[in-house]
Image (cartoon, rainbow, N blue to C red; front, side, top):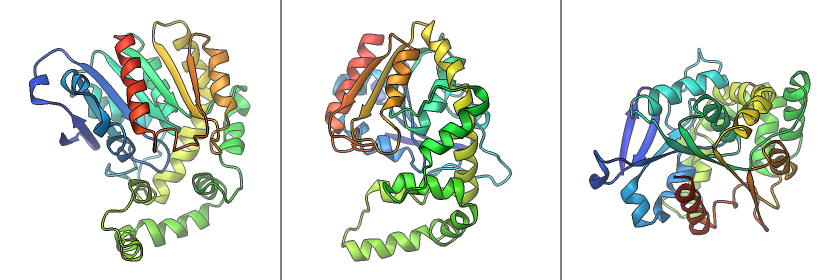
Length: 301
């Protein structure tokens, strides 16, 4: 496993030596809001089968403004910005003429945009808890804001989305106190918990700035909502394999979103995981999830 800084995005690639120079399959992983590539490298990567390790190149990306990728203050973090940086950081440098996409939550919007752009290159797209609400372009952004950033205290991710969406000054204060001093807080939590290594999901919660989170929330999650119909229409008429996975107890993205995609793309495969929520649809069932991915890639090749 090799860590690379490609262009300006942080990209972690997993490639075996005997895979170098040989024709291989490629997979790009995109994380969700307030997350990072750790969501994949801590769950999927350790559970890959030996044949997959030999024949696939995996790219786990820290999206612009999150994780270990730069967080420029002069960027509005639009969907176009994210797409351009993935192009410059992964697709162009590694000359990916064919690839699979795997995305979680907010990452699904970016993945669908990539798939629509590279219809002839994408072999399959796996969407985990994709936020999609059919509505007119005029009301799509507001619908997404109201449904995905409801003013609620629980679950924590929904509360964080609410703060980032509706309470700008409060969100700015929280980011100033916690995110800017995240190493200090991580040290304190390590002392209190008695654990040297904190759970990656706790670390990810502080891996952003107020500016990057605020603008990504409004310009990708909400702004991208009005483009979802267009992206799905493109997939509907293509040969791309579309797979949707969501937990039956997801409190962040309504379960209806998966059914909405099925209605828009009739050939999409929808798998509802019983008793799983927004994160435990992957975390806690890593082996089963990874095996499902490998089957999808094998069928799509």
